[in-house]
Amino acid sequence: MAQTEKTDSPEESPEQKTGTLKDGLIANSGIFYGWWILLALALMRVMASGVGNNVRSLLVIPLEEEFGATRAQISLMATAGSLAIALTGPLGGWLMDRYGPRRVMFISLAFAASGYVMLAGAQSLWQVIVIFTIPLGVAYNWAILNSGAPILNNWFDRGKARALSLLNVGHGAGALMLPFMALAITELGWRQAMLIGATAMVVVGFPVVWVARNTPEEMGLAPDGDPALVTTDGPVVSAAQSGMTLAQAARGPFFWAIGIGSACMLFVNSSIAFHLVPLLVWKGESESFGAILLSTQLTWTVPVVLGVSWAADRFDGTRIMTVMMSVVLIGVVVMLWADAIWAYVLAVSLLAFGGSHWAILWAVLGRQYGRAHYNIIRLSIYSILIAGMSGAPYFAGLTFDRTDSYAPWLRILLVVGVLGVISFAIAAATRTRSTPKVKV
Image 1 (cartoon, helix red, strand yellow):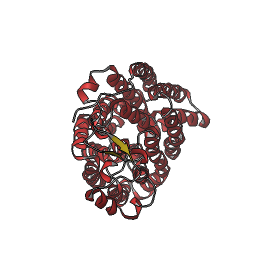
Image 2 (image 1 turned 60 degrees about the horizontal axis):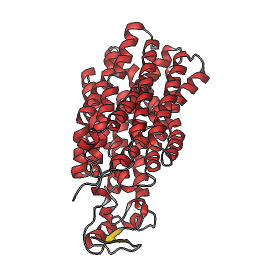
Image 3 (image 1 turned 90 degrees about the vertical axis):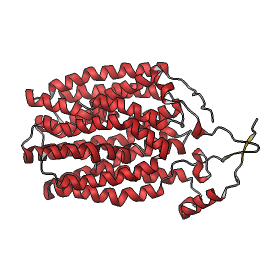
Image 4 (image 1 turned 120 degrees about the vertical axis):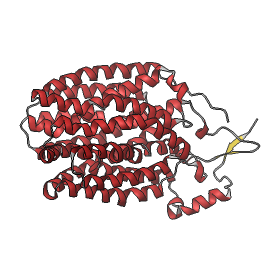
């Protein structure tokens, strides 16, 4: 039987020493390298939040004016992109498990940056939809939203939810850039604003890929900065080799309950976020006020995600998500009846909980299923929830086109929110605390 011991100064192989030396002063600064990776990934989220998918709400009215399209037709850019992301999610997870998330991030980032350039030259609405489906849909998600979480899941254990929440802080903080993007669209035109997005992706994204590393083990380190585990007479099963397979996970009710609950959360959040600016215009407010309120909602996710992640590292994360879904449900009620600025601010503050559950979800999955097949399990669940919410922006726009009102859609969201609360409650009741080890 192999004996193991922990040591503060494990003997490094030549490959480990070379890998450490390659990272220069950062790797030898005395600070756990996982924190540098977290900082880099968070900065990329700041950039992406300000010039990425959140900008779609700012484009609804300009695209409507330029192409003479209905809001339902314009909303197809979100629906088609979501369906493509859902269909390719398991493939992305398999690629990350097979080749590492860092390599997938690099290739996807190049495609996403090119997508902004293509969007700036789009001459028809169908071209806009295709661009938002592939380079700014699938590639953008793989590069920005789905590569950072598996890396941090490998680098952090005890503080998993906190690390993932700090990553999401970048997404919320980046919302402060939205008013500037709104100004750029107004003053320079939406095409020039998209070129700004392409530049930001290149300038910020590729240095982040250079800093990131897939696992602490490849640098001779251990998660959380703990002493590295070494063996005296044989190999042991490492954390990177332990965990459920996708087949094992899918046989349990937790897998489906957490997926359906998250899909309901996103169904509500995505449709309101996409239509928030035109929704407020319908209520009699200005486009600029809508942009400010959208920025407020996304920025408010920063303190929200920090608070709920602290709770999720100490309590059951699935129960935390049940409470969050309930808060979002109340937010929909407030938005339905709001007719004053204070009510709008209250509504978006409550709805911000809907965009804050990602860190908790990824941490819960990491603890439930382990590291060995984390990416394919995570992105398979991601496909479920993306598929579930994919039609939300389109049907919200279709409802407005037919009724000249967003009120019927908000009432539908109330029903979806109740289903989400029930699903998260089932997930909390079926959660397990241990995962089987895979043989090596």
